[in-house]
Image (cartoon, rainbow over all chains, first blue to last red; front, side):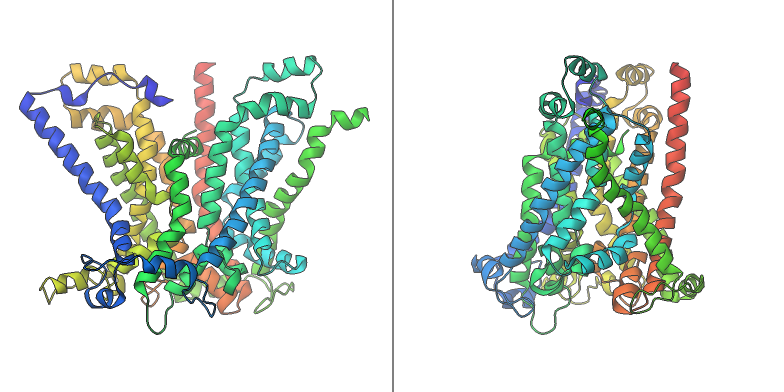
Length: 299
Length: 295
């Protein structure tokens, strides 16, 4: 990637030794300052999952934990009461998985084939189709709320996870198609032509040439679809309620509008739990995450 | 049979593309139609004219929301670009553990706006966060209640938004810095330009298309902003941090004014178009220019 072409000059290797040392110190101080700014909020919230409630109520979130217990994590997971049911977030977690996994797989698989066709089997009208698909990426969710309500209602999918799977698959299609198409367009056409001369058909070329070249774009797409769908809030809130909500919506339902006693420590644990799957994906697939970013915006 | 194999690509494409086209075009037309219809609590297809647009633009809630969007959007984009550039330049100084720094600065992008907003709400709120901590330290008169202050709450949203997005700006700008021609930089160095001067005069100006691209992406985020505000302030206090997306939700699902809600949704689309169409035209024009130069 771009790293390979990086300049061989070291901006800091100018000036006296002493000056170099000062600049280095300043740079690391700045970086550390920013790093604290980024990490502290989450560290603070984590520490509060370990503190007893009365301490949090008395001293607030920003205080050193005097006694530590992991029981709030267990409570948040399995027995905390949210909206009438006392099953903790485990149920909403399950909902989110049931939503994000199928929607990610479906939208990625279809997007892969669509991208292959739009880049390698160009036909009349392909550009128009591609234009519409691109528009789909930018269409704000607010424009689709009423039609979705109608469609889900008629399919009998209101307030179901399947309904959300449908929404995220179709909404995600634009994105996955665009991504895959832009990736496959860089595969030389000669490769495809040669295969066709050898008598390979549509699916054979897909299996033998396109699929083996796909892993990088597949990983990027899967990462982006999964994190995006897991973190999505609006559709989950509008189209599901109560025990059928995905976790991101459920969190707001119980930590946003609380009447009566607040269980900050348990809520904090639940909030952090909801962030774990995207964070793991980010940490494991970080390189691809960044690649998706750069491909998406720098073109 | 022969025809079938010849047209496999089209046949495979038809179902999903039909769905996508329906999604993009029919759904948009649908909402557009709703915005000029008689709908209130339930959708109604009778044509009623553009009255709801007028009512929308004369409601204080909406004008405040649009003003907030302008203020929030510009500060959020500029702030993220400034912080992102700073971080990218810092990391570009051949620092040790580069990937660790990058991972730290970019991770907010992986977590949801809801988590981000909730976490920062606890920290900003005077009953749970910084203010209480200062009181505990003995500074009884300390005040830090921006989040509950009409005049400052929007800046809390801006700050949190920048916290969430600056890593994104950093990642793209860093990739840009790494793509700058090394000879150009060396030439500047030989001419005796200092490091900050080299960045300001040589490196940053050459990657301005990246700044533009990042700004457009972030503006798009800003226009669609919803979850962050819901988690952080729920639009309050009062309507101090209301944004258009919140108004849409309220009108459609809380107040039973579907037509006006649809009109508000259309206005969000218009805002997006005002950003994206000029940008698309511009990039198209630039691509053609470059094509001419090379060809």
